Image (cartoon, rainbow, N blue to C red; front, side, top):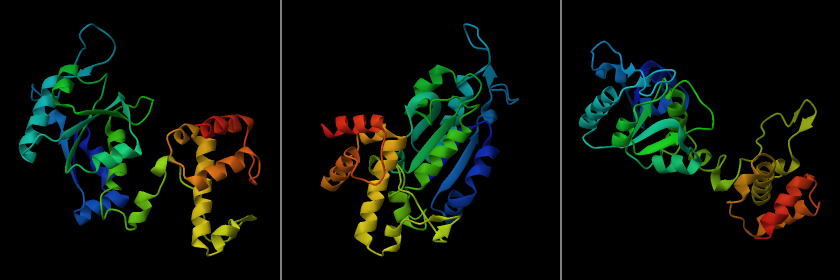
Length: 263
């Protein structure tokens, strides 16, 4: 997987990505990272790439030509027209399935905006995907780009030392991840759930699945609306609804489950 980032702050991307799991993957050659400083393609030659917006308003706008020239130089280097992701609050919200989709690309380019944005004309010309990491505004696209590259990297074979951890974490199968525990068995009076000490793998997996459903119900019930449930899942949901399970749920959660099970 080859990442390319068009940015005004290449050092920010380089410092962030050359650490931890992604840093090791780059060292091993499983990932590559190329940063392109858009300032190098300034029309004036002095690094200025912004100007006042037409129609007035606060702030400055990144000009079309430096961005276009940077992209054209990148295309020539790669030898093709790669998929280009523009990080913007107006884009589709990033999710796990999108990370898996992007991981199938051999080359992936990220365009990081700043100021009040980028001239719309160049976006129409070169962007293939507009993506947001959430409904809030940041000072630039560098942090979102690194978030997305981290998520995509985990889907690349060999990047994780234990591939299973990349396949069965949060948001897989439409559910949040189950609780995790480690030694000691008792910490400040709190014990590890007995089922995890049983050695009964099938029961452990069932418990984990139930906990994923329960945690999703508590924190992200909207995800349950598109999750796929088998017979055992539905049995657990009915137990929650009828108070047969040791954990009680709120009346609001009961109402939600009743509607969910009706379909």
